[in-house]
Length: 393
Image (cartoon, rainbow, N blue to C red; front, side, top):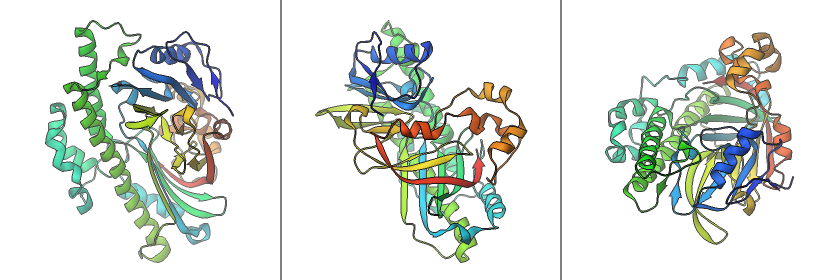
């Protein structure tokens, strides 16, 4: 589907791939961001766009010489990892409940942390720079060490999937855990204080920003890159454990080389070149989709997910959606649905089916097929996956 330019009175245009007409609050949020003086060329909204804090989730914001910490968000580096295994579903038939139990045993969820710390975690290069991070997180070194290789809560998950050719895939969704959240909050708070001191008139206090070549910008950018690297490695550590679990059940523990591995952020900022200029690109709930980039677009816990390859669409700043996008808030989902609905909507999936995950019910999300149809000019589908085991955060 080609995008449309929204009819908003903002300094820069807003291009939208959304599969719905933005409501007043969403339109206002898009207009607020597009009115900032340092926004480059236009804002791009992905098909799964919905309300966020300061900026819409599902927005791609390119800026010149400035970055907005709240637009990156508090789960810095949140993203997806997926691995295609060289065997088919028949090799794990009848073993799904056991696999799920092993995942739950070896990958801490919610606010949990690891009791034992593996060598790869201790050896991670990022620890060398920990002392350079914001002083507000200096007491978290031990917690960050123990949480490396843990899932977190909310919509984070570990899934065992089959593609349409019955190949087995391992997939997971997680970010930079408590340390990333805390770093984000420290810098967002600094940004708001600076805006107050400078008596800046912002359309929304959450759009406080740092200007390039200032100490505050440098400090945020350094911490941001660190947290993004932490998030990526966190996914690698969990994927390593997940792969070992599956190998135990398939080869008795012998390592199997995967056919494809993908690891991509969908909450982050990076320096990139677009329309011939150096810009900072913030993807708040969006995945980079340059030509030949592999990306992962998950549905909800009872629907399909997609492995995609980017088409390098410049108008979207070479981006695509990061999932189905929520249709209703967590509070509303808890009011609208019951445990019976969960059981019905997750048929054929080995997962928890209790009141604790009602806010993650498939019915609370947009139909993923519609979201995919809206971005056929952004990505091509490489594989279509359906989960058979799901462990929620």
